[in-house]
Image 1 (cartoon, rainbow, N blue to C red):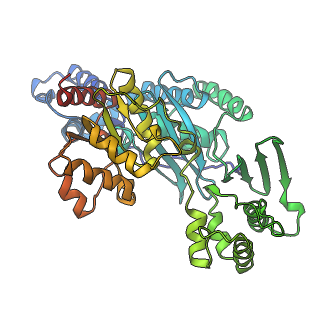
Image 2 (cartoon, one colour):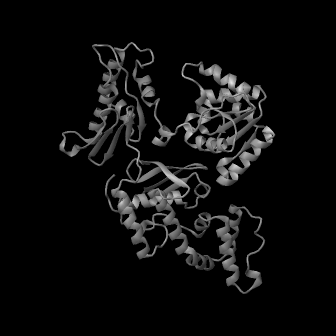
Image 3 (cartoon, rainbow, N blue to C red):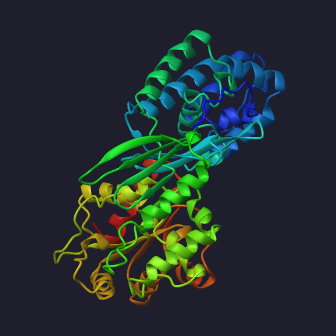
Amino acid sequence: MGKKKSNQKGLETFTFKTFLKSLTIPRIKEIINRFNQSVKSKEKKLKGYSAFKKDELVDFIDSSLSDIEKGKLYQDFERDFAESLLLNGLSLISGEHKVERIQSAVIIAGENGYNVWFSSKYGSQKASLQVINNSIERGCSCVIGKNDGLCLHQMAIYLMLIGKKIISSDALPFKVEKDFFASIQKRLDLLATQSLFKEDPAIMLEGDYKIYINDELVTLDWGGDYAGKSTKDISNEDINVETWVTNKVVDLILKNIKVRAVTGQPTKILLDNYNIVSKIMKNPDHVKRILKKFSVLNDQNLPKNEMVLEIYLKSNLKQSTAELSAEPPFSAYMGDKPFIFVSYTHKDKAEVYPILQKLYLKGFRIWYDEGIPLSTDWCNTIAEKLMQCSLFLSFISPYVTESDNTQDEIHLAINEKKPYLAIYLKETELNPGLKMRIRRVQGILKHEMEEEQFYNKLVDDLGNILKL
């Protein structure tokens, strides 16, 4: 990533309402109490808010106070708010946070931001933050972030960008004491030199072969019996970085195919944060070379034309190393006692597995597709286990609409009249057929709940359905 220092200030408009959205409900009520103590007139005191939900509470305060009153309250709380958020964000980067950790971070195209995946025993979150046209665009799947508040996950990315010299501390949306931030900066500098900003590679292929691109420096990092790492300065070459990297990736895709021996298999691309597949497809010579090598293998599963080639090259792509590294947390239940059948798409496993682990530790018997031996008829095993289960637990996300297998499981569970509980990981627009079939199914909107609230409801609902 380039070391360009920004002189931008105030890259996002941080209103009093945004400040409130960045707080928990107890903290917001503390602000109300502070205000009520500061006014003498009973008529001016804020009342009647005890039953409000957070959004209602934020709107109530924002509409009840004058701009002067808002400014005074924010001034009173700004220092504590800023320092607490900065320390929490720093603890995520350093790995010292007591609950959450960074799974992986992907540099956004243009090198002006990050997509970062966080995990905890309660589940996973994805946050993004980047500089676009001298302003900040950010978002997060956590409760605070998805309601437009500034959360610790987004603050971690702010600090990553400051540590990488992409923006300066002046770009933060609040005031910070100079001496306090100096201590933060020292930690950021140390963490940067220790490579603790866990970045995903620009490109990753099978065999643990990673390619990192930093301006005109390209780092190749590979695993296996002859693992190694090297960095090449492309400015010394006669071609540009994009051309050099594209040539290298095509070589890697084809390196195991031996034309004379008619043996070998292509190396698959697993991560593409550099849009390398599109770059390959734009070069007719690369397309022709790949198809020619594929043709010698007489493998019916390999593409024969340009249109199918692009689909093939993208077929194994993951969003991040977090998705690649998510391992089944325990063995699937294989006994004769009542058990829960879990349906999910593999693109959601980084979020699903921590939830399953939590249920497993609470004593629930769980079967999921980890329990299928390689030699087994996959389809029949899925159907048999589903028909034997005592409860069908379905994880719903937009990826469900892309998965025929997951939709087949849902249809079979409904046809077999299995007790059914759906967990909505994200707001999802289902296709009409699926929506019609599960409209009466009991569901939990995880994406709208606090983590502790979600787990308590999930355990209670499972217990009630299973009559535990």
